[in-house]
Amino acid sequence: MRKIKLLDHLRPYQYEIGNAVLASVLAHQGLTFSVEVARQGGKNEISACLEIGLLVLSIGESKNIVKCSPTFRPQTLISMMRLKERLNDAGFAGVWQSELGYIVRLGRARVIFLSADVSSNVVGNTAHLLLEIDEAQDVSREKYSKEFKPMGATNNATTVLYGTTWDDTTLLEEVKQTNLELERRDGLKRHFRYDWQEVAEYNSDYLAYVERERERLGENHPLFLTQYRLLPIRGGGGFLDAAQRAQLQGEHERMHRGGPGRIYVAGIDLAGEAEEVEGEYLVRPDAGRDATVVTIGELDFTGFDEIHREPEIRIVEHYRWVGVRHPALYGRLVDILKNVWKCRRIVVDATGVGEPVASFLRKALGSRVVPFKFTAQSKSELGFNLLAAINSGRLKVYKGDGSAEYREFWHEMEKARSQYRPSRTMNFYVDSSRGHDDFLMSMALLVEAGREYIPRGAKGSGDKIV
Image: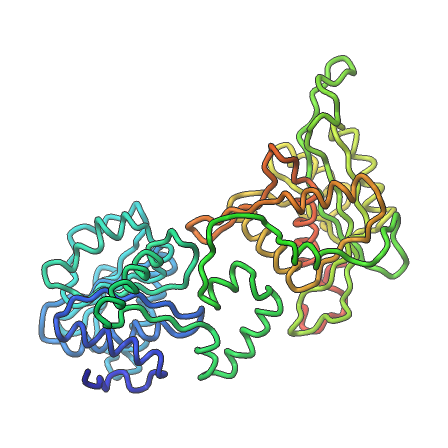
């Protein structure tokens, strides 16, 4: 394979990818490549170099490169901006032109940038030289097969799919497995994979950054596992394994009121209200009903610095009410949060029936109360942050005291499940047939409260919350 000088400035792993893709284009081989590079490892730089090289080589010909991303805004726009910047850097400022808001042209050659959103209308475009699929793990397999892949048929265009792994159902994983099988048959390399350790060999700043992320998230956190180690998640399963549950167990005593000079926060998961007629509950309050759970945590900022931006959280108390109407809890909640614990920050479930409770607490306690609305995206982020706190050893629960709250807490930790979605989001829960997840959600909201609190005088902390 002859050397392509246009790629000489790239790192060795980037050059290997770019050289293979360009060789396929120039030889009209029409190969399909899959490329997995750890997050921030430079895959977009490879793409921009390929685009510039092919634009220059085809400057006098009416030929297209087609590149798509899962969304037009911001992903496709970012790709266009990067190409324009690299063209300027290469001396083509004032030479290249922009057309229709989604095309960059150099001479007669063009790069057409499209959205791969399932609702986008892309049929009719042709890829003469190269078809690029960015963040392919987030692109619909059906959209790719029916609308994008045929764009290269007329000219036998080379295709390259870039991304990081997620689970074993994504488009990127499907193409990767096909490529690995083809490699076994003919020895021609079609899949390229460079995890964070390989990228870090060429960038000491990157090494330092990812090592901090590994410490913050944990080696087997879903995001670190997929974006940096490039290992796919195999479906769902238990939310916390035995090792994580062992990490969560602390050695401190349970407490029943706050101590002087200490910082406390709270997470509140609210239950649906029991139905009551003439003072009688229609069902027994404890007969399998959700509970309102308040989890109190003490924050420890001993290791708080520019690297460790989140405190340790020691869970010191649980409150649990089953079948109690929300208005009956108002006074007690205010007293517990304001007088017993003097909580600095309180994150409360404000979804559905929780909204008026959150509103009441905010009026009574002020800005220290933060309403949290559960959506697929917000709950996913909550789950990822909870896993990071557990994996890094920053979250501990009081040692066993024989209480019903302690037993229920650990029952939920053992029964909690996780589900990973194609959109790189997750759900975590306890199946209703196996119990409830009130303690689990309250703990996740507690972690959110700890993440949002910034101590007085914290170096570089910006706004201070008291």
